Length: 216
Image 1 (cartoon, rainbow, N blue to C red):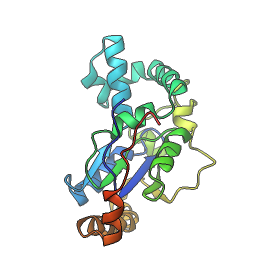
Image 2: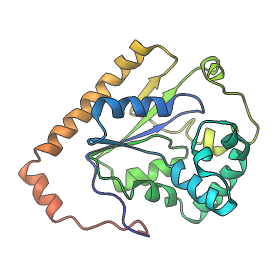
Image 3: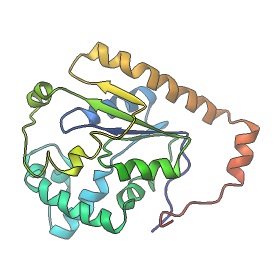
C-alpha cells in the first residue's frame, strides 16, 4: 500500500454515537478554519467504497444519510470487522493517504484500534474528541435502536476505557456548542501559526524525517 499523507500539525480524532452530530461538528470546525488549512477525514469513506465495489452497490447512496445506507449497515459492519481483523489500520491508512492540510479532523473513529493507529503514528499531534447527545436528541434526529448495529463494537467500542482530551455536548444549543469549540479552534489556529512559521528546529527535523510506510 502507498505511503500515508503528509505530516500533520494537529490530528483531532472524533467519536460518538449515531446521530450525535459528529459530522456536523467536524464540518463546522472546517468552516471556521477553512478547507486549505483543515481537512475532514472519514474512516467510513474507503470502507464504503470497497464494500460498494465488492457488492455492486450505489456508492453515493452509501455515503449519504438516507435509508439506503441503513439497510446495508449491519452487513457492512460485519464485512469491515473482517478486514480489520486482517489489518487493524487498513481503513485509517486509506483515509489519510491523500491528506495534505496541516489540521486533520477524523470524523468517525469507532474502535480503540482506530485511536491506537493515530496515537502510534502521530503521538504528539493526536487529540481525541467525544461528541455526546442525549437519546432524546438523537431520536429527534432520526435515531432508533437497531439490534446488531447499536450494540455492536462499531457503536460501543469507545464507550469506556478512553480518556478523551475533549468532550463536546451537542444537543442543539448553538451558543453552547460554539463555546465548547472555542478552545479547540484556538489550539488549531496556534498549530496553523506554527505551520506557517516553523522554528529552525522543526525545519531541520522535517528535512531529515524518513517517509512512513502504511504497511509498517
